[in-house]
Length: 229
Image 1 (tube, rainbow, N blue to C red):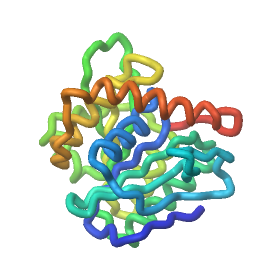
Image 2: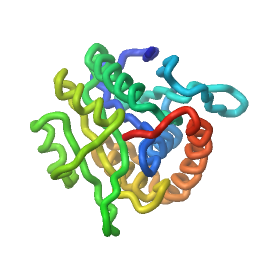
Image 3: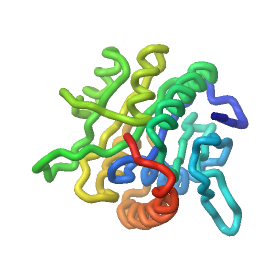
């Protein structure tokens, strides 16, 4: 597995938008990248990844890309492919190793969660250490009392805890298979935490469009991978 980045990410917040139920991670990542005009600075590649290439304006792109905003010290991983369990575990491990060496301040992983019989758009959170619980309380994020998470998010949390890298998993409440409402709530929360200054007037309509784009790319990797996380 190869993580390539042009530039210094010391002190950055890294937002990880990997596929999972509801496709919340990629929707959030893509919206931030496009609305904030983040610059492409790197990619993640592996022989284990499915043979899929994203295409933008006639140019082939890596399906797992890294963008950054040096003014705000924010980096975003946008993934448009799904991962098998072994790849997800390895990717989480390598990202924590990379974050530690690069001096990244924290990793915020984005995902969705199904809450039975819930019609509330609440944000839930899981952290890699007890000291980060105060962060959940500060922003009114509900800590997950009990449960299990899998895939890349789980690998990030476990390895972050072991290597003392701060990892926060934000979970949007899902209402549909591909949920732009949950993504919108996550983006609003990130706006509070990181002062992204997102334009909310067109947020939901943009999220619907992004949802369709992400889903289209991901459909081509289903035959080669199983989605986790």
